[in-house]
Image 1 (cartoon, rainbow, N blue to C red):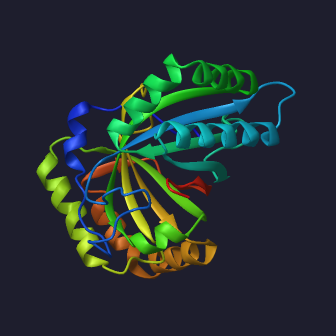
Image 2: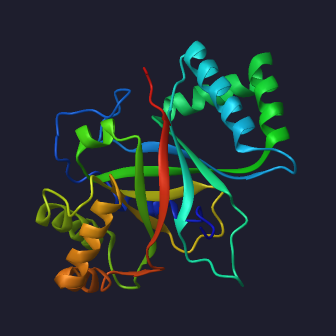
Length: 262
């Protein structure tokens, strides 16, 4: 996983308003509206010398208990590299990534409590003793989702592709293109979600100004998508590339560590 988070133009946020959901009246776990932009706090982490994932997971459980107590629960998703762009000459030092997804208000209150309360500061010190994590902020928008499936699936695969709008392509035309893609595949193609991820804070080193994230429930779904691509879906991809320049797909294995209210 190479530089998962990166820089962006603030104006790019307007490109990616939510387009379609398989269940438009269904909310994501925790009362998150699929049609509303979400805040994604992303931490790119590497364990400190001598520390283990078991220690990090124990800390994560403490954070979750703290967030419940303070009323600032978030959806916590842990991501591990699976099929990457890395090779022996160019491997990322990031061992895992955590996404804390919530509305913006919850994220703000959580950080204020984390920084101002004795318990929050104690957890913060323990966090820094276990891992070096570079924190970024991004806006996450739903382009298409099977909300019920996403709410139930705790282990899945996410295919990322970092992109940048081509010169001469307007914001409105790219928004329309995203809408037409979502409308063309109302049941998805092996996937259960499509999101756009737009870095807004701490992202100066990205491979693009936004990322398309396609979520699959399992490898069978991912291979269904690849079969569709091989049998003609590549034409739709080729057409999309008239609008954007992209880095190419890579895949992370994801685990939903916590959902608000659970």
